[in-house]
Image (tube, rainbow, N blue to C red; front, side, top):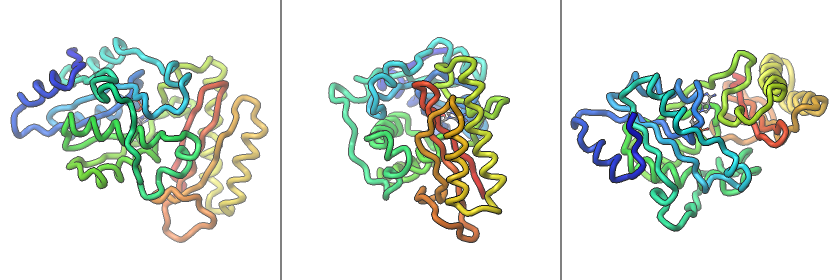
Length: 281
Ligand code: AMP
């Protein structure tokens, strides 16, 4: 499988495609797993050409250790993609290729979406995400781009980004792939010990319990219930649990009829930060 490391090389390849081609794009940070593959498979069904980018974007990390320890497994990634389809184009640029010698992000206003949950706990994260995707969308020129609901806040922010930047790309949200235990697949799971991995399924179990109780309890009571459950669990340190409106991502105080709600969790297992979420309605 050929991996393109430069914009020029990638563009040359894409410019040779038939004019009728539709490009489906799956941006990733690599250390690929079946969750990524599910996005790629959806993209393969809906487009004549699929591009997968592998780029650990420095501007979206607020923590230097997390950036440094982020798993980088380009050879395994390429072979997993090759097994999925030999026609995938892989773009794995260097930071200099994307940012030149000025690795900074643009300041975005995503209508408040960027100030909730992940935005409160990871300073500048969504400016970094917006900046890199704006670059990548302009390089790859996809008709459709695929994002996992695993990063639900990111998905909503990307929808906002393409409006702000007036990018002609359709954003497609894809369901969360989970391990048998319920643990959401994540590149960061590779950093967990076997015990931590087993215990991390508690996040999914708690989300499921909250969903089961959603119709019988108030939102503050459900939030207390989840927080209490995490407090009793010695294996995980809860950063936040929130029930929020799925579109505005604002914390919900009381249920409104027919409004879409989701529960969101960020928790640490050792020094590994895990996130997950679930639709409640
Ligand atoms: P990442 O490499 O973590 O930046 O993820 C790249 C894309 O894959 C993002 O759109 C993620 O939301 C998506 N993704 C990551 N994990 C999963 C999963 N378990 N199920 C579905 N999509 C996922």
